[in-house]
Length: 230
Ligand SMILES: Nc1ncnc2c1ncn2[C@@H]1O[C@H](COP(=O)(O)OP(=O)(O)OP(=O)(O)O)[C@@H](O)[C@H]1O
Image (cartoon, rainbow, N blue to C red; front, side, top):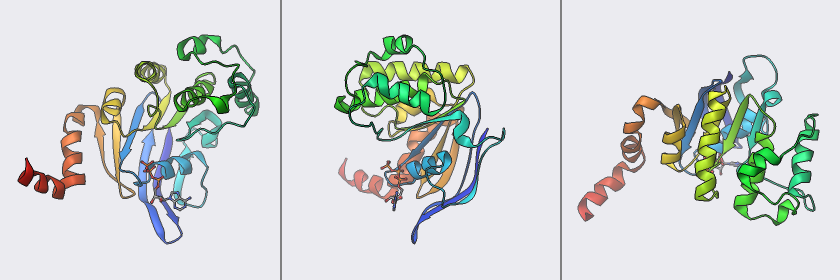
């Protein structure tokens, strides 16, 4: 299990995360929802070790450093110039001392032109390539920052199915999204992050109240204004 306990992270005087605690269990899809600037990417960066100046505990309870068995899809994947999609995948595997395998099975699903330079891909293709680099590696845990953003409808549907199958195979998946439906359709539990605090965690059986709760929590005053208008 990946455990985040009393995580506190500040940039200078600005406290971004206040005592955040959550667990990512194997075989579970855990969604993270929150407004722009709520601290989702900061939480992910701390969890994956891209930030180290924080207080609290982050650990894989099985023992090894979190990154050993965990793959990250960053919000905006970066590709070195003049590397083809195929070379990027090979680079990702070699960087982790993994054998370079045949990508054609996974790429029959995502249909990327792997012999084209990755930095010339469209935004959606870049996201697919970064996802492909995770899928070919069989991680125990995946951390996905906005995985659905930028993908076309077909790829969105496919990705939901892939995530559910990985979950059923035992992978623990933490994902962020601003698309509530994408979260409620795929997740087993959802944490709501407001102003750097986990306000509440919802189990799947409680998802039917999530949208109404978020409207109240985020827009109580605006709902009052709306009442006067419509
Ligand atoms: N490197 C940084 N230096 C200073 N402040 C930062 C840095 N990174 C993030 N922040 C601040 O931390 C807060 C949380 O940012 P973060 O990117 O984690 O939010 P988010 O929930 O992922 O937002 P979004 O939904 O827009 O992606 C914001 O106020 C942001 O300005």
